[in-house]
Every structure is written in C-alpha cells, then in structure tokens.
Length: 311
Image: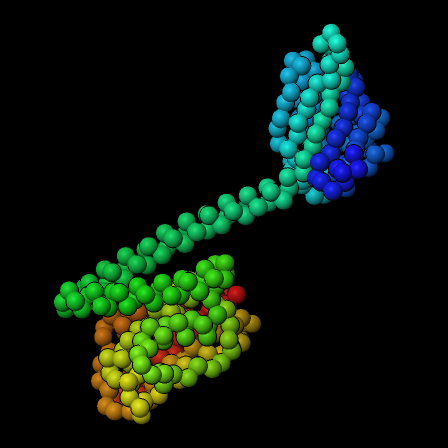
C-alpha cells in the first residue's frame, strides 16, 4: 500500500450498498473524509456518479469484471481515469461488494489530444504546401521557354520552399527566424566564395505561411541577382534589412528591404513571373504589399508584412 503513493493508482472497496469502506491513495483532489462512509453521488459530479453507480451495480448483478475510461471534473479540473471494477464474491458466488482500481491517465489523454491536433495541423499544412507546389509548377511551366529551363527554375523554387519548411518544422510548426530563413535561401546560391550579402535588423520569428513566401521572395531575388551577375561581382553588394514599425491603428508592420548595388551593368528587366511573385503572390500571402524598383545600377525590393504574421 505504501508503494501506491508513488503511482497514479487508487484502490477502493464498497459494500453491497456501494458505500465506501476502504480507500487507498486517492487522487489529490479527494480526501478519505470525502469518500469513506459515502457513495459516489455524495462527492462526484452527477454524470460521473451515475456512470460509476450503474457500472458497479452491473458488476454485482452479472459478477463479471468491467473496465472503462471516465473523465471526472474534480475541483474544476477534468481528470481522466482508467477504471477497473471487480466483484467481491463469497464462497457461494454472491456479490458482497466491489473493488475498484482507478488509474489516472490524464497526462496520456492530453498527449493524445496534442498528437491528434498536431496530425490535423500537419495534414492541413501538407494540403496547403501541395497547393503551393502545384501552383509553382503551373506558373513556372507557363513562363518557361524550354524543358531544361523549366526544370532548373522549378527545382530552385522547390528547394526554396523545402528549406523554409525545414526551418518551420525545426520550430515545431511555430514559424521561422528571419535571419535563419534568409541565410538558408542565400546558401542555395553559394559557390566557392562567400556571398556579398549583409543581413541586419530586428530578428523575429514569422509565421509558417510567411516563412514559406518570404523564403520564396528571397530565392527569386537571389536568383535574379545570379542571372545579372550581382552575386558574382566583386563590386556588387546586397543588403537585406528588416525592422518592425508601429502603425497608427496600433498594429505592427514588418518591413523587409532587399537592396542591390550592382557592380557592372545589370538588365533593367526582371522575368515576368519573378515580378509577379514579388509584387502580387508573396504580398497577398502575408497580407501586405510589395514594391520592386529596378535600374541599371540598383535593385530594391520592399515587402511589408502584416504584424499578425509575427509570432
């Protein structure tokens, strides 16, 4: 009996009138004074008491053990119990009472609920991710001029999403740290030397949705810089700044600024799909706005992200 104190197991005995005569290691919310000499209706909520009383009466009538799970509200907290009821039979087989074993499985139940919620969240996000991938494939195919061009462009965008998704998963689906997100995307274009990219600002964790689309925006900008030679030019530099600003309505806006100073001569035209991603698709996903300005010596992109995407 002393060993029970280190377990979530309670043992009780009730006579044929279902009055408690003996109890060991009761749940912390109950005391022996509450239970001994009483029946279930005296200290349990009505529905729980009815279930317990009916089950014990059935065990006494059938003389067959019973097992079931029952949630019980004890002092404002719902606890789950795995309950075993066994008949106490005399030599002639007549039921003189019942033994009850109650095992507190609340922690296990909470973990089961968390797991179900997580699986539901994974399923939901997986469907969204598949929709994004299908959209990327379709839009990339429409803008590609050749099969190799499609494969290269789509593969790069897919890797960008995969890297952003890895960061989200590492944080238990809570989001991604901005500096990590940018570094991972830039690393896709790493060759033999360090890249001329400087990152600074208010390092924040952004939502999973924002992480995917910001990762895609950084990928598009870096890919464009590679096409125009900025990331391979000793004279070219790229600054990525992000800062949080308060709005007049009391809400917040996260501003990400990508600024390229081109060493040589850069093309002033950006691929139409890249521009669409940066000015329409990404801003819509983060409930903000995106502005892209391109000249022969400078590329600047401003992305405003609604504060609801900051976790």
